[in-house]
Image (spheres, rainbow, N blue to C red):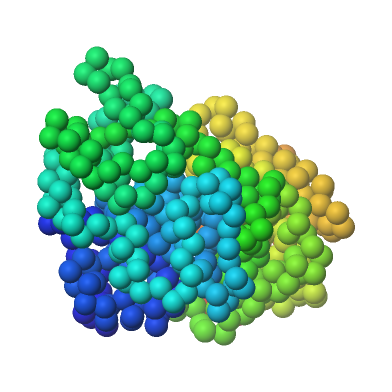
Length: 475
Ligand SMILES: [Fe+2]
Ligand SMILES: [Fe+2]
């Protein structure tokens, strides 16, 4: 096991770029590490989609090809495909069909082209099968030469200087795979000339001749990259359907919100029973959504597909459920009202900037603040278009930023005028925000930060929070 993690962190620099593999089947991963070739060209391996997404986002590590299986549980395959096109444009993408779980995955040539996928590899797939797709053994020397030259260049600088084209390292094209882009060269004059068409591959001796002329990057048009991103987004949002990539987002994903959130609660001394309770609450809300087919509403679906927002919604629902439990009120019968309101309280923020979505008003411009201050009403409006929604949900959402000291918005309603569920969600929302901050800045203390918001809530709500999270007050 230790050997595995050591190997996975090695990045093979001398010959070829490593392959990136994501597979949630431990036997498959074991098989790779047993393959002697994995010692020669150690792959970068992840066992879930989320880590792969993070890696792609944060590192510009050149890779020879990206391979992932068709039944990742934590994120939909289509989302990962989109991520590859966004962060590693032109790197060959392969899907390993998991035929045990998905029946006979086959894609038409047309669909593969639309998605920018090289091939579907059918089970069983060995490591040798994988590297054969993208690494030509005879080209090792050439790869070294190309990679060395590439490593001296700064991609970022090139990117900033150009609006229409994206530079791609020439070693990306060493795989011999067909390119999903027209490729261009940039001349010293700043003019671009096309050197190959979409669907063609570039022979290695041709690449070498470019490298000998000190060419380290080819270029693709940004609009071509956008074409693949748009197609993936249309599938994600349900505007078009892909027969083979079932949109696995749905509500199952909600429970993913929180390994780190749950770990935080555990480390903070929140007892196991409460954690179980909160999780089963979120699960109940999922079942409610499924039963009522609420998830088929396009905007709700999009919201659930937007990872960060779905996470914020479910973390808020999780905390709100524990506060409601501490109240032991009859109103707990209204699990669906509290849960649905908590989950979708910020749905109107869906299409706004990250700054607005983060609900950090201190960093907003005046026009951003205007949008932000109106979002409780807008969210309520979005939810009112959901067939069969309980009108109570709309009221609860409308008031989730009202505070008893009248410092809230949009109506500055005060003590006595705010629904209990709105307060529970409001306090949970504040706490979920602090947890979000804590994930990026471990020096923050969410509990200390909460001290300043207590005066904005009714005493019983604050006490409920303290009893659950700080083991003080009534329990
Ligand atoms: Fe909000
Ligand atoms: Fe929120």
